[in-house]
Image (cartoon, rainbow, N blue to C red):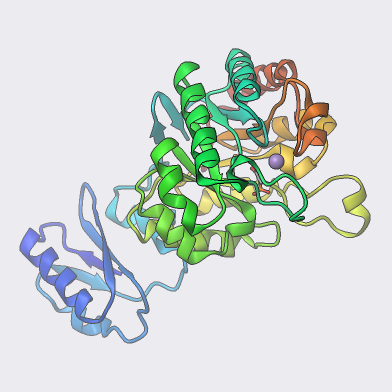
Length: 355
Ligand code: PEP
Ligand code: MN
């Protein structure tokens, strides 16, 4: 990392960036209110920091060991630019702002009628963002793969319903991409691109999605530690896309735990991550629980832990759903979750980095 003097000129900053490139690295330039800090992106082990330290305009040059320095509060503080919590604006919705954000909708988009019915009702319940899976990651090849599992035309048709439902009911929309081949197409239709838990480690996919310059909903893998989750987040931010919404969705349960819930919601991760990074984090109680009767409690707990919002699966008639019916709540139940969570947020205030 290169910390420039507060009166460093543009030419001096450019000269440092040029020097960094000579070593085959990229530069992440944060121009703060008081000084510019340049992060090195790539393998820093062969960089002679003592040589950088004596370049004109440089205050300090040193190696930073943390694998996620670009998203860390500590690094952002140096430039006094992004030590503030990052608020991601999508249409009229602010993720990470004063109000908690509720993303809701079916696990999978199954038909235009199903999607529009649910969209109308989640909007009425107070949701801010509409979700709906079109490319579903499934364990079995024999189960419903989402409408994106068919032809390109079918995928586009389902994506266009999602776009229209979002426009119609005034909610930005989010859907998951499962592979690199879907990125271009999905980016044409949605406001937020979701990278699911199973793809958390796919660094080529992360890079490609980040280059679309759209907000990304990035879910933690169920076996990933916090450091791994944040380190892989860095791949997207290294592409100069800082609009990343992190999502805790449960980690593998211990022993007989699996008989009681699909995963274990790691609430500790919520405040722990918010102390490390200025990026917002939300909680997905639906996939964590795997059963609808736990969704209310986990939603309240997520907001109480300081999450910036929730991602909840909702269906007007969960028993007829083709995927994840057991964990979807109804729009009426969603209304109860949202009004209760808003009260909890009001009581505890907006605390992303308290203490
Ligand atoms: C989803 O949100 O639709 C999903 C499949 O979740 P996860 O990646 O967390 O399993
Ligand atoms: Mn689901």
